[in-house]
Image 1 (tube, helix red, strand yellow):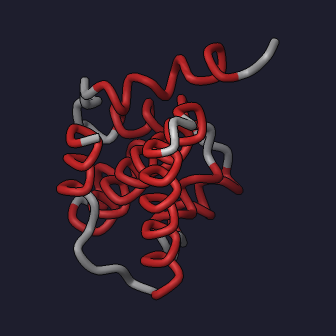
Image 2 (cartoon, one colour; image 1 turned 180 degrees about the horizontal axis):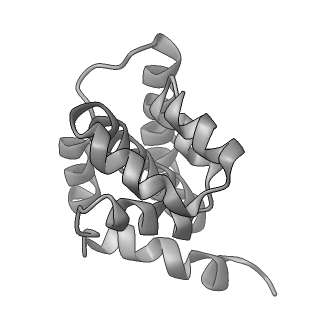
Length: 132
């Protein structure tokens, strides 16, 4: 639980809208409540969503601080998705992109994909947490 709280150090301190703040607060509450009650599969899901929020916020920052790199990395997307991402008004717009693709996009921007375990889990989650 203490290690999970470390992720909070990488999320924004303030948000553009109250809805974004409410969403992140909800995810933390869901994580903590499920973890405390031994519902680890649900705690993991909330934690994963927090980790992906971290990724979306990073891409959002890059979009604003390094727009040239951001535009270059859009080369793999279709025109509609490219337009959507260029006009994104919130970091959560990036959640419309497949997780593996968004992590590859982060790599294309020129930022090394973090090797933290909370981001590595994105690729393995479906096999571990689906009944098939």
